[in-house]
Amino acid sequence: MLHNYCEQKTAGYPCVGGVRFIFYDILGLSKKQIGEDDALAFLFSSPKKQTEKAYQAGKSALYDKHDYAQAERQLRKAAQLGHAEGQRLYATLLFLHKKDIPAALEWMEKAAAQNEPHAVRRCVELYSGEDGPYEP
Picture 1 (cartoon, one colour):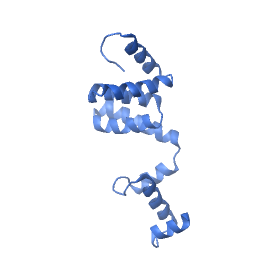
Picture 2: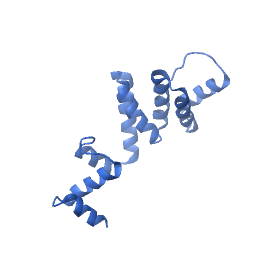
Picture 3: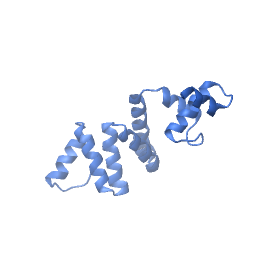
């Protein structure tokens, strides 16, 4: 069935192109949303590398570039992939820039559940009733 799908989608392109088409279809993406090289790199890279890459890109966008939209996209990806520091930074971003306290608490708790030290400290402070500025 996969072979037929590949042949149907590629219409004469090499099979690698069929893999690309299948990849786009599975993720619900178009070539405009993700380039072929990015799609192949994503397809063949390990989940750990993808997670760390998203975290580093989000951290850089947040602290170095102050590009909060880019930071949110990348940190959300890292958080959803289970990166504890990414979850903490995403929670911080949600709290400080989006003012979405329920979502921020949810992500901070997920990071704390993975023993991310700053998240654990912050959850203890939040739930013990300590006042003070929110700091990651």
